[in-house]
Each structure stands twice: as structure tokens, then as C-alpha cells.
Length: 563
Ligand SMILES: [Zn+2]
Ligand SMILES: [Zn+2]
Image (tube, rainbow, N blue to C red):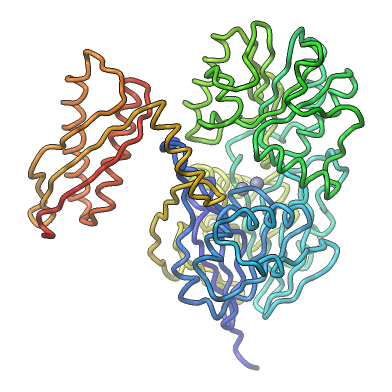
């Protein structure tokens, strides 16, 4: 009998972070890519940057790529598709996704700077009741519950064994759309036998089961009932079920809902057109009409639940929103939990809203949010249903994945059957054997500008940040050959209000910059751009801690060693 070829799985992102999810499956010169997302940086760099995966491996192997399969429509799974398309040109890669996911991808591509007129012809709808055959992969999909509708997990049947990818999932026994996770499909594949399970680890630290989404609906209704004045609900625009519950609660109490924020309006339009959001009659009004109704009849639905600098909620908090001035007694509900790294931005938004007299309710303590990711008992249940030979935690920071591994151990999996991989790792699978066989080096790819890639937008946003926060220019002269800082950083401040402590802060800043450069040298980092970035990031953190301001920081390095 001919020897079966091995299956390679390569992680180009999604490990050591919540974001930038992308996994490559390769067999017999056929590549299928699963998800293609972006990641927001630790703390917002002046509001406009995100990271995408390093596509170099895919560029080199573009002839082998047969399909891009997307599990659901969150930015950490679809956000980098326009950049992948740009990088793989002129090759055209077909995309497979469920209906809502496809709708969101379509809108993303059409507003993308890199859009090609025929890109939409590459979009193929996944019907989870049907199988899909591509090259050596037989795929089956199972619906899962998550914080966006239409999410799926994937079963890959190959001649060396079955592979299961959980997608981002949780178990909700009575979800808003009535589409319960397809337990039977998961359990059937478990009966058939599974070589490896790739499992969402995001909430592996949280005990028990996730609270059902409908409980949030009850709390929202109660809060809406108590509100004396206007209500502002901030949530992710992609959280269609949450938006549905806001609309339903408003309808029951005869309140009117006005949505604001470009992405919010866009997503509501797509979701309602595709039938995923049911807009009750006589409930939605344009934001221009809010003054026509009594204060206690108004609900505003906005973006900004992550404290994003240019979002509607942030503008309201800063008293810069053109239409809405926060009044004493307004109720603000932040219906999301912070993505790690956004805590400061959210706190400052909440503080500003409170100062203006709003009552602010946020996170799970107030019962206004539940997570979309499986907690400990759900992860254990997934493992028990799939009964994999190997268990590979994905979608999470290192600590989440370690915790996820411990959960597998706690229900009897042995250590050698659990694999903690890193970004860039290459997993090789043969019959009943799975091991990390290599690693490819990955770069951090930063993107300046928002998903639209629209240059006018970027300039506009830059200007807004500049006008609000000013700019600091850092010029440093180094010699990478001698590993020396030749001249301490020269700092120029523009548009920043002078404070007496500045001299002291700038002296400290210069030292911190020198230390950062030395650290780069210690790590054999001599690439000028990387050193510039390092200086920028280090100084940014230092400066925002010192005076809680976020000016634009421009870092320039002259390397005498390279002249
Ligand atoms: Zn997700
Ligand atoms: Zn995700």
C-alpha cells in the first residue's frame, strides 16, 4: 500500500494572543487556510494601528493554496483578508464562509483600498448541512454558539485521520436565534475517532459555564425600565444578538432606538438584510430625530465599548459628540468586556462619563454582558464529545492555552497528548503521531490606518489625534556596529501643554530610550526600523503613565554603523 503523506499544520498567528487567527493545513501540495484575522495592539497606539499575520509562507506557496475557510465574522478572523488578497496577487483564492460571515467579508472587501472588481466572485457560501471537498480534505461544518451569529467549527476528514477545529465557541442551550450548537455532529465525529482537536482557549481561566445570552436580555430590560432619562448602550457592532435584545427591550417599553457609529450602522444594515437581525416595527429612528422624543423614550446604540479613541461613546465622554451631550441621569450601559490591553481606555471613558453625571453600568458585574467563549466546563465537554487523541489549545494568550491544557489533563488526557504550539510552529501529523517538526520565523506586520485602508480616513484621524494630543519627535543617534548610543535622544514637543515637571520627565525619558536601545543591542536587534518602533513603544508607555496623555510619537534613528 502506498505510504500516506503527512499533514502539516502551520500557525501563522493566534497563539500567544487573542487576535490574528490563522491556521494553515497542508497535504500533498494542497493548502487550505483557516481564518485570516487582525490583532489590535496592546494598548492603542494613536488609534489607527493593528497587526496582521505574516503572509510570507503563503506568498511562497501561493500555487498550493486551494481555499480560505472562515469560521465566523469577527475581526480577529476576517480582518486581514484584504491584506492577504493584496499580498497574494495576482493569484485569486476562493473564500468559503457561512452567509452572515460572507456578508461581512463582502462589505469589508468592497470598502477596501485593495478591492479588485471580481473579488466578490471568489465568495462561496458554506451550508453547514452540506459537506465540502477540497483536494485531500473532506470538510464538514458544525454550528456553534458565539458572540456573533453563524459561527461554525470544522471537521477535516483526511486519510491520516480526522481533525477538528472548534472555532470560537460556547454552548448556549437556548440561544437568541434558536440555533443550538450541533452537538450530534461533534459527538458523531468523536465516535468515528479524532486525531487532533484544536480548541478555543480564550476563557479557559473562567470556572463553570458561560451565562446564557438571554440573561443579559433580562438585565437590559430591567435597566431600561428603571431609566429616568436617555439610555446609551455601547457594544460591538458584530454582536447581533445583543443588538437584537436591545431592540426587543426597547420595543416592549415603547422606547425608540437610534444607532450611531459607521460600523454599527453598516453591520445592522447587513444583518437585517440577511435576516439575522429582526428590527421591530416603529422602534428604530435616525439619530437626527432623538430630540423629537421625551428623554426617557430614547435608547442610543453605539460603538466604543472598548474605549476606542474615535468612537461615538468616547466622543460623548469627551463632550465632543456633535449631537449628544451627556446629561445628569443619562444611563450608559457598556455591554462588553475589555479586550486585554484596552482596560485603560475603557476606564478613562467611564470616568469621563461619570464626571458628566451619567450612571454607568459595565461588564458582567452589572449583568450587562456575557462572554462568547467557552468556559472551563464547556471546554471539558467539547473534549469529551470529540475524544481527540491529541489536544491542541489555540486562540489565546500563552496563559490561556496552558490553562486549557490543564483542563484536558484534569479529565484524564496525558501530558504527551497535549501540544502547546507557538506562532510559526509547524505541526506534522502522520497516522497516530503528531509532533512539532519545525518553526518558521514570523515578523510582526503593522498596518497604519483602519480596515478600510482609505488614505483620506487615515489622514483625518491622524489630524484629529494630533490636534487633541500633540506630537513628540524623538531623534536618536546610535552605532549598531559598536552597540552604542552615540547621542542621547533629542526630544521635540509640539502642541503639548507645558507642565513644570516636563524637564524631569524628559530627562527620565531620555534614559529610558537609551535603555531600550541597549536592550535591542543585547537581543542582537540591529534593524533600524525595529529599534525605532521599540523606542516609540517604550516611550509611549512611559509618557502615558507619567501624564496620562497620548500624543503622536515619531521616532527616528540614525545609525552611524550603517552609514
Ligand atoms: Zn470570535
Ligand atoms: Zn476570535
